[in-house]
Image 1 (spheres, rainbow, N blue to C red):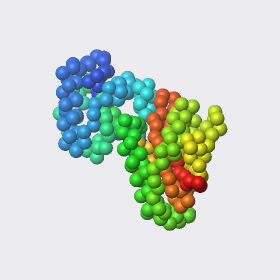
Image 2: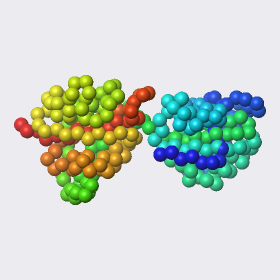
Image 3: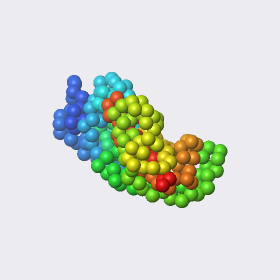
Image 4: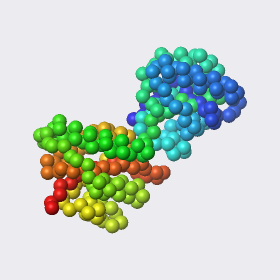
Length: 275
């Protein structure tokens, strides 16, 4: 989600734009502190980001927002960019932000660049998942999936009644992890591995699962809840998630890399044993 305002903001404690009238480091420090206080007054605490500050410096030097972020290899899930001509008046900048709090809330990080007259500010939430918290994400992935099954769903024009919850299965999780990794490594989307031709059924069988297996894949989400919500908007994926035959579940998430089609990859694998 991208939001851009016609104010004029941007800075970088770590790399502000140099030029005629460039601010001293103490001026940059003062601006960062003032912005921190303004954000706190708005009830939000984004963290200063070197990457976003460098992108803000690029904006100050004339780059379009998308080009500036691409130069810094930053992929945003939520984004707000604003510019200000502030003429060195730090207090005025703080006042402008606190008068418009709603625009500045909900972001994880910020970056800015200034030259003493102009200021450019970028706030963003990066489109990445903290993979060190994978166990937590998978717990939430299963919970969100089972909550959807418990509630019943309307998948396109088809009403799907509530169905029993799924149980975690390590073999299906392994199949999901393999596919999530391969989509990043081989840079493809979909359910068929372009190198070995494998599908969810084959990937699960390779890990010792005997039975029926199905799969959902979604891209770009940064939470398990968002991933499930996205899947429910697709009739085919929704029906797969609500399939009453399935009793077991495995999931995985992976982040894209530079050049990947998507920033994040979420995989659900459903199954029912036949032996």
